Image (cartoon, rainbow, N blue to C red; front, side):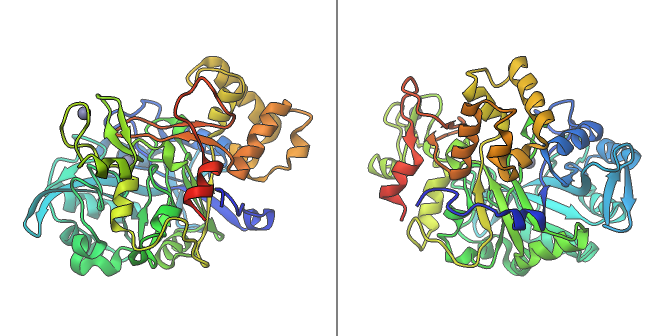
Length: 433
Ligand SMILES: [Zn+2]
Ligand SMILES: [Zn+2]
């Protein structure tokens, strides 16, 4: 089977809206200074997102800005940027980092996304958190509290708060991470487990990988960008059925009623494979096991990636496809398609210019990638660009997995000068169904 065997139909797209629920503001470490509401609203609009998480609501300065820019919309229970009312709506979100000991193991590190219905609830959450640590240091603050206790305490503030483990598989800071995590949600959340309705799969894993774990069958899988800069907005996203309201987003996450998720190729994520970045050693889970988890270059323990962790916890074979799950749609961001087709640098001005030009011809990024008839684009797009979009939709691409903090490489066309690329379609003949 190849990726994207099932692609969302036009009928399905008409019934759904796209939300990116995890981003960061300019107040988070290593984030762009352009992560401000006016730019986020504008970028979200041209990408085709209808809901964007505000990120960082725990940060007092950012919260002050949010209150200046955003107005509560009583019809949706969401927030609207007052100067761009036709733009995407905003939902109050934040991410926190917890470092704690549990079950005789110290240094557990878990990142959680918190979603809240309104400013009043956010203020109560912040008051609670401010007693545990300093909210001003970082847009993603760190606390020394157990995730079970934190979840139970937050739900006392409001039942309408959602708590979602972020990038659930990354090695260093996640609920299932190889170095600091747990083997199950029950082990991490104890009595609070029934209130954990969803996990964020993160860039290095996709729903297909998560489906291999039967314990996650009743957990909703969401995808978000975790963007630190505007261009990364919506690189992963979750499609919900209408109506576009807080209540409906909350219930859909609670019950798993999601239409589809937009996925990064997990191979492109920074922690898909195992290895050592400094030693330039990149290994599959099988190779790591054969080497006894030691780096063949420096002899130190290898950084065990997401695929490896999933395989350790999986009770189903690779390629298992459940019948009743939302579609998993793998895409390549449009700017990356353009840079490959025109052989440009990702950060170059000319790539950016072409990106804007093609969007102005055709509509939003997601309309181009998901919706528009490729025939209709023939007049305005060169044929190689159309061929590239077609291949992305069909999931026929080449990849070189990321490892130990190094992004992977995705290519739409075969590239002889790039070593180590594997055709995903070809690979799947052997490893998937
Ligand atoms: Zn984040
Ligand atoms: Zn090494």
